[in-house]
Image 1 (cartoon, protein in one colour):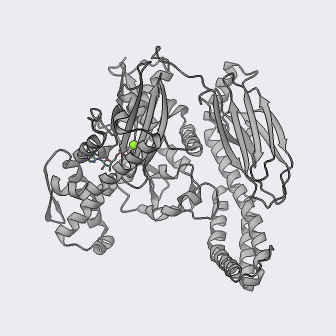
Image 2 (tube, rainbow, N blue to C red):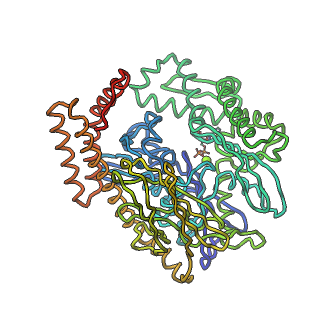
Image 3 (cartoon, rainbow, N blue to C red):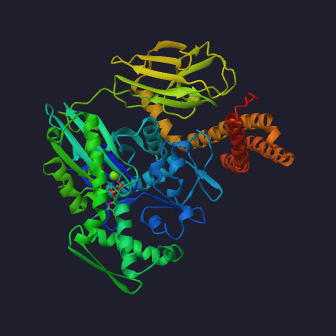
Length: 614
Ligand code: ADP
Ligand code: MG
């Protein structure tokens, strides 16, 4: 066995921090977690950036990050912000991204367009995960197929599921999704002693986001009492403050900068270098465009002071949500590269009136903790309590025969999770709910556990009913599925026994199948989702034409009809990108028409005229 490599007989489970700015992979070596370095043995961070070259090659990490300024349209960063989000969710911060996010009005999940292709955040994250997997494999000299992946504590069910899907697509069996603050605490050994009960705060200031989490730890269970933060506050803002400072020093107009990309890039790089240097030095001196620039630690601190203050306001809110006072917090864990800034440490420490935990590398601590969690799951830490988990995912069938997971495999038991659905046809009265178990994207490849019909939904237009489906899994593994239409209160409930009749072997086979078929499943899912979206649009497009004929010019009606027909034709092909292109063309053309229709309706309403129901 090579020095430093691990026992190949045993499966290595890696821990992955899939970050907004940087990602890392770690594993246990001689009972200690270590982060995997790049081949130069220098860097453990992989920038979470994906670049598509003209030849449709994919670059990940530093190589991609270097192209951010020169080729923003093909370089995708911050994809974590889009995980499990719909267009509606991200509408407010479109301007933040340098690449093309499709801006349909729809509730469907976001897609990103690069040239003529459409990617989901799941697919893009899978590229980053593949890079980490490859890195770990070359470091370990063995195949890596199991992982624990961390997510922010505030991630909802959709975002967690999307992260799992990305892992599967990258060829990883995701054993557990772990909260980032929990992982950070584990890295410091907090919560590993069985009887301990305490409240801790995890302060995470990364590249573009700030999160504060208050956790209560008891008997190995980490409960999130409160989270708070700012999704647009982080080290990037520190950089921006330094950039402005240098611009003033050099007497350069911000507008000039927009045109001179290489100068802009140079200032950006120098600003980040200055910020990092000032974490240990008192002075920074550099050169930009041949001219000297300088900044002192004191100057830097007065620039970022208001930003740090904002993080403290979030801490105060989190504490008040958790109904705790600073003296009731026993430990403060510092996470994220930006907590290297001494002012940040000082102020956080002053706020909580105690020293902070900052011995570990703040940008590695989450990955290190994920590796520890992986080791616990592997059964290498025998004395630790392991909660019972569901062996396979549980979900329902949605339009097109797709599996929609409600309780993911490896979730704690007992468990309760739910999701809301709606109807796809006007006046729909009944809804069939078919419950499945398994990891594949199409229900036909999974195991059917049962079905029932929710009857008596009062007639409403498609999309209006709010059908809530709850999965309640009790400690004995019995699943109760409850469906109710929230507007009318119509409800129905059934009990199902999920694992009945499946042995270990079959479970393992179902799991391996799902990873082996992840790529093709994803393609089928992509196509079916595109078709569903197209069908919804065809339906609402026809309705729109019917209802708004009066305010549309004849050629507008003609053109809309033509585009609807193009879309209909596109759905007959087996290419999701063709469908997405047709959707985008139709949306681009009709969105001003829809606005006009809305204005007319509002104006009519304000005049007190009764608006016809169409
Ligand atoms: P994320 O969790 O968002 O993926 P990280 O925890 O890796 O991000 O933090 C990245 C941020 O940390 C960047 O803004 C980077 O400039 C900053 N950073 C890294 N090292 C230092 C340092 N020595 N001093 C100050 N900031 C730093
Ligand atoms: Mg992070």
